[in-house]
Length: 414
Image (cartoon, rainbow, N blue to C red; front, side):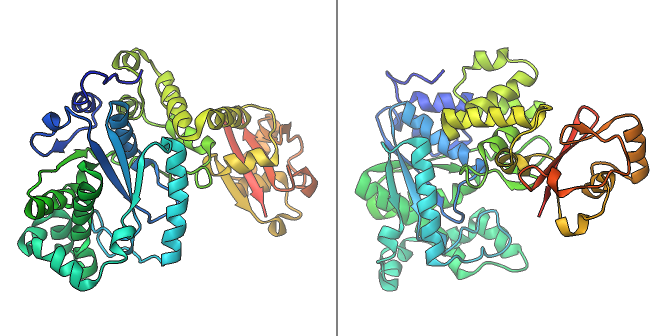
């Protein structure tokens, strides 16, 4: 169920608090939101896809849209060249202009697919790339006080670190502060949202606009998303869970959400779906993870992406074999190993399973064969001395090995 804001756009604040999406704001935000406002969130383009950790801000911005406000997406085509020091212990590696432009194109296409095109999309390179150093210092730098900049958590933590902070990254908050001022002047943007670690950078914009324009702007922060085990939400053993299907397949995206621990899944349902609180409370056991996975996969990858994820889930966990194309998509998100064809010549299937890590030893493999407990490509290994043959590889690449009924592994050969 999606929230109804037809009568009061300021309901968004109450709604966000109920869903665990509100941490802090400047005074008077709720009163300010009684009228339709332009609300923005910024994204630096440090990779060619945003990831699941970014999704909390994206969906919060979308909730503003659902309640009658106008969302604005700011791409950091210029600020990506500088690097945000927040949450970092050392300078970020600098990207080439070509890489930044590539990343921006990919992220832009991905966000438009998720959110639609009836939003305002802007790029801060459009104003910063033409600005001279004297203009920057005269029109921006003179409005910032070094003592206040040094007091920001993102700067102070880096000042105390061994490597310190470069002037390049120290200047980041001036650029982000000017972004807000520029958007307020050109598009009447009056609200910025972001993660709680961005409070210092965001209020730099409200302070700058107040000094230069005498205009009050507002910011709202969202709690950072950490799992109960202390791990960062959106990270898996194989790396970040991306929103682009080229980086993370719909199947892998779906499987990650299915694996959310019980103690975290209700929080995720509140923050990432539009299910009513009553619907969320009525869900029990694994159906909560299934509901989270299906709702969010459908939102990011649309209905066809969800159906593909469900089909591949059936392939991965049934006893029937899939195709090479199926296994190409599920490989990274499924228990797997990669072996070399050259080193596997003349080895037994049991030795292959040992080398892949499915079983611990050849003697264990012999016992499993005797008990008919080891399968390769759906066939029981009867003879512990049976040799590995290239012609059994699915699509010339994969073996699907299974120990008992539940322990399965995909082995690729190159």
